[in-house]
Image 1 (cartoon, helix red, strand yellow):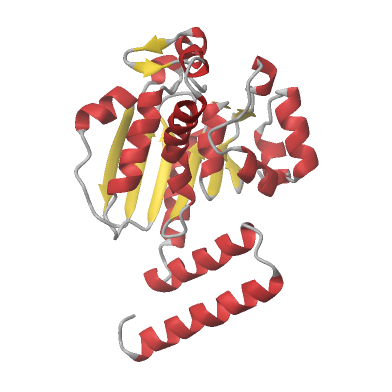
Image 2 (spheres, rainbow, N blue to C red):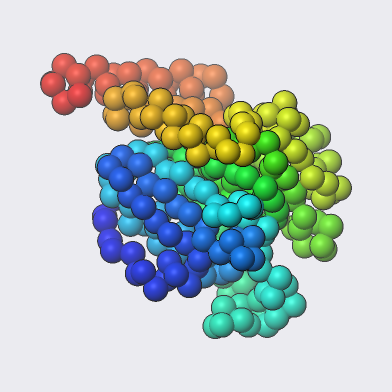
Amino acid sequence: MTTAAIDPELLQRGGLTLDVDGPRATITLARPGVLNAQTPYTWEALRAIGESLPDDVRAVVVRGEGRAFSAGLDRKFFTATEVDGQPGLAGIAGLADEEADTTIAAFQAGFSWLRDPTRVTIAAVQGHAIGAGFQLALACDLRVVADDVQFCMAETTLGIVPDLGGTYPLVHAVGYSRAVEICLSGRRVGADEAVAIGLALRAVPRAELDAAVDAGVASLLGAPPKAAAETLALLCGVAEGADPARALAAERAAQLRRVRSLAAGEG
């Protein structure tokens, strides 16, 4: 992957901070005064981060500053045609089909790279994770949550749909029936239920969230990088619906690459 500089002004407009420390990158939603509400600039900045992270980054943590992970889309975008040069929902409604599709696809790209099997991604979630906030957490491979977490897929009850890539991982995490109920009811899912239904890996007291995520990242980075990347790719293929025969073939091919690499002293 080509490493490119990230425009600090874009990060600021998107309400994000980025810290890269060796094999770990931490993305922080940093608008605590509005519960880390997101805007199209947030998604543009997320996409830029995904395109520019160094190759040696093996783990990405996504977290929110303050008492919430993210309360979803900034409300001023719900009825506006345009806000600060970015389209609101009313503006998107007025676009031609192809232009509207391209616009929404660009928003989705800010989330979809988090499921690229070249690295493992972890959402550290506290407080509200609503709508776009829920979908951002779902974009990550793993979710570690505080005991005060409240997941909510609010879009359908507001007359729209989840369109930032959240439907696929939600169904895979909790199953079709639970996903239907969560989306159509718009109800809140707390920490205990999130762990019980597979939405979260574990729940911890709020004060212990950062430490739990740090420990989890350290354990995930313990595996040799190339073996970890191959294993992530195998698991991703199964999650995306590879049948048993294809999964077995993928394992054989990955193992052959690994043993040849080890035999050549490449690690």
